[in-house]
Amino acid sequence: MNYVLLFLLAYCLGSIPTAVWVSRGFFGIDIRDYGSGNAGATNTFRVLGPRWGSFVMVCDSLKGFLAVKLALFLPEYASNEIAFLNIQLIFGMAAVLGHIFPVWANFRGGKGVATLFGLIIGISPWTALACSGVFLLVLYLTRFVSLSSILASLAFPVFILVIFNVDNHFYRVFAVAVALLVILTHQKNIGRIIRGGESKVPIFKNRDRRKQRHNNG
Image 1 (cartoon, rainbow, N blue to C red):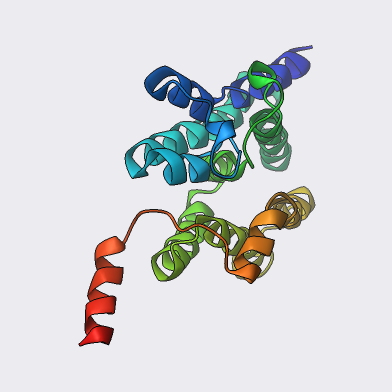
Image 2 (image 1 turned 180 degrees about the horizontal axis):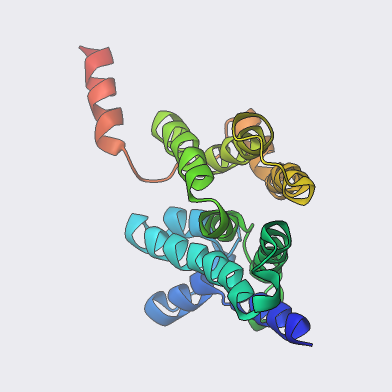
């Protein structure tokens, strides 16, 4: 029974629509009516700017992190490292599902990347740091948050299966599933990138201005 209640709590935690509440509370709009139509950090960056985009990203990541930590309320799993990791993954995925299909926002949420990142921070900080490196490098080079998220998610199973070689079959399957999920939820973004219509987030503009002046010079 505790397991079921905690699973539902994790889902409800993930369902907190940070981007929707921020856009409605501070700007009088629904973020889902603008940009890509998603209630996530990327669209908040695009519509409301870096400050609010960063705030939403931190909050959405925190949802995944806290959901993972709900496993601490099940001490019977603590003595088995593999079982404890698996239950953490299950609670974390409940939060991700909550973010994508939030009960508090008519089941219209975001794509779950920030919440997934918080999940990974909660169970494997070094892996999260490695994926962050991939994300930031791609973001710096392209300013496409969507492409950065996709490539970081593809790097995730590489780190788990190859580099860190984690000896947990459920975690290995989870890592591959995460990559597939992110690709699936970013199909429209992939199409826009191919067509050249994907929006860039308003960061690293000074770098682009310097590059443009250098090219013109």
